Image (cartoon, rainbow over all chains, first blue to last red):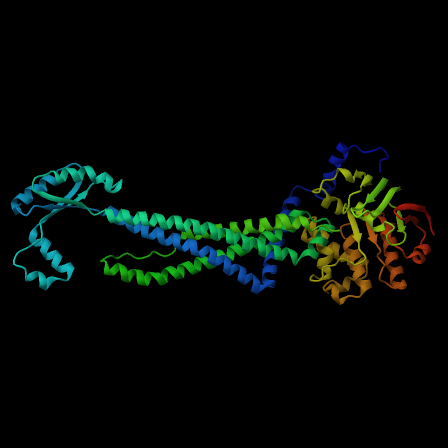
Length: 333
Length: 222
């Protein structure tokens, strides 16, 4: 015990020395740190288990808040992919004038096939067009009553590149329309573009919904952790009295947040997988009516992992918001 | 070990907790603080623990001016002090073992050492057989001894006690005081706030008598 007054600098240097004294070798702090984390994780698990009903409620609310925007995102994603597939197989239909003979049409087809930007050109003459229409339209018998074939011959053109959508195909379309004997050129892309525009609207809607639900999720998490802190007020006081740092007190609550996030994330993942499978049955039915073999591909692994990571991060963030304020308020008096 | 230099503590409600108090307790001493309730005994202990800050003056603990401690340093100060409370401050949802182990867990003692030191502390207070019990199943005297085991398990150089015999009968009180004397004998500085004058008088230790926040008397016996 020195009698001379200690300067503040001296004492500042002394302050950590007490803590340093108990750290005998360099491995000790690391070991005790990881040990303390293990203990905190165990404590978190115990606390969640001690209140199964309220924990379940919290987790379910979080699950719904996670599953709704994630489900919409996955759904929109898959429908979008369908649109892209259709864009890939997009073709230009070149309708020929009625006066064009079959021979002329063949020559024209060869001419079109030689154009720049054309990968393939197939002639669908009047008879073939009628046969195909009879088959697909279900009007077979009625069409046979017709005295003449009303369908024009068509050259089906597959462009070599589809990058840029309908707009990029415009020059080719103009070129084709200028050919003699061509009545009309149609690009079967417009409705795909309309679909993607509509999906864009839904995407924004989902984004806004996700933002609101994330906010709700944070509030739920913050409130749950606040209650957990309140119910442990006595314990926090004692821990602080015997020298527990704020970080030590905080840690189990942060683990609770992460744990809730993990459980809610897993539940949401399971719920989405089941939901998509259930939806898929009717989606296949609708697709079949449109002569498509489109089907939902289930919950992608990457999306599932993102969901899990996001959920845990949100749990942590919510818990952090709660502990930051409340633990500092609890001081021994 | 503890030095108060003209320490005053005035509470926001105008109550004068301590009034220009100065004294010095050397390492290895055992000292009683007495006085009526409201004389400032608890305030004095709270200042040492940094639960309160003085309105003026300086408090030194272990050569450290507490004024220089930031709030982040306070836990490390408390780890070097053992405290026994009148109301025990035990955690009732944990076993006796877990209660006593708390300071060791907080300062990051390795698990194998925790078991050894908790049992040594419980053995010292005569409660080794109760390590698996919950505090609610113990008598008041036993609960107080668990509190003492928790206060000494991390081998602090300074032991504080606030009315440690407050609710106990004279026989148990004498046992508790004997425990404190044992710790003092092995070099621990002990500071006990108590108004149990008959008991203190029988023990031959330095005594600080407070009255309305001032030091009334500083000397041996009563």
